[in-house]
Image (cartoon, rainbow, N blue to C red; front, side, top):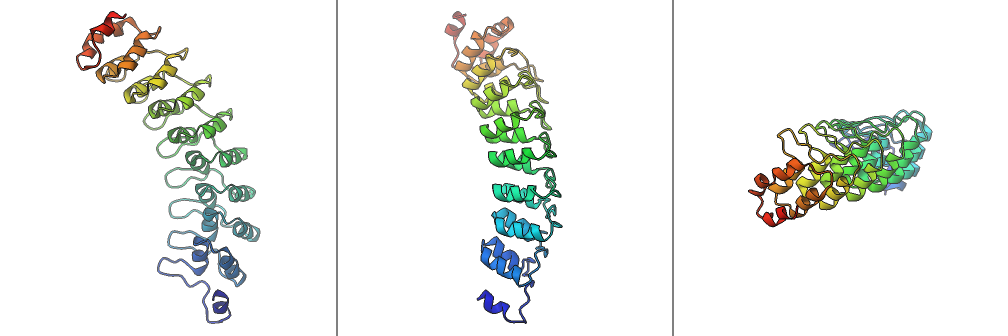
Length: 308
């Protein structure tokens, strides 16, 4: 049918619909690569954009259509860094789709901007880290210009996004880069270790603590430490790992003067209270504060006190 229409000289190859999407864009969106190739052969314009400022290279990159992408790049690289209305480039679209071969093809072009962010400040490396695409992360890290510590509009780094999503292999790949800042906080002062502690990702907590630069006592804008985050959510296994860290200071209070011990006692977290009490680094003044904390803790009783 398409071939028949193309034989009609009156057919307008680039006539868009109400959203400015042309037959060429529509064929790519719907993964009809043979039709896309046929339209390109007939002279359809790959640079004609839709209402979202997306051209064929954007769509083909997102859909993982390697042959189309390579054909476009062999013709011209004028659109390789073109951003749509949300600031997304073809490279970012390829990463969002998780398409390693297309990502590699785009990175092979010297003009490709590897750190160009979208309107939210998200770069290709951030998107790959958040998506758990470890092979794409490694590919992006090969590019000398890649900024491993770039921050989005919320202050999050690629490492932090990988931690939030719980992608351990990506975290390991990022930590293998000597430039990776393990303590870089977001706009709220929250670090990757805090996110890992809050999420209950014990393996990620262990991985981060292997890094000599990791600050186990860092505080966010509210004065909370990684230990406080773990206690607040009730992750006993994470609490135990943090208590074994050589530099841990257990009795750091937040901006309201609340310590991890107080938080655990007030929340009725019996096992965490026990873990904090048995920590050899636990300050004696916390035991003195126990009676006040126990007033709101029905699970803890005088029997626990008599054990210490």
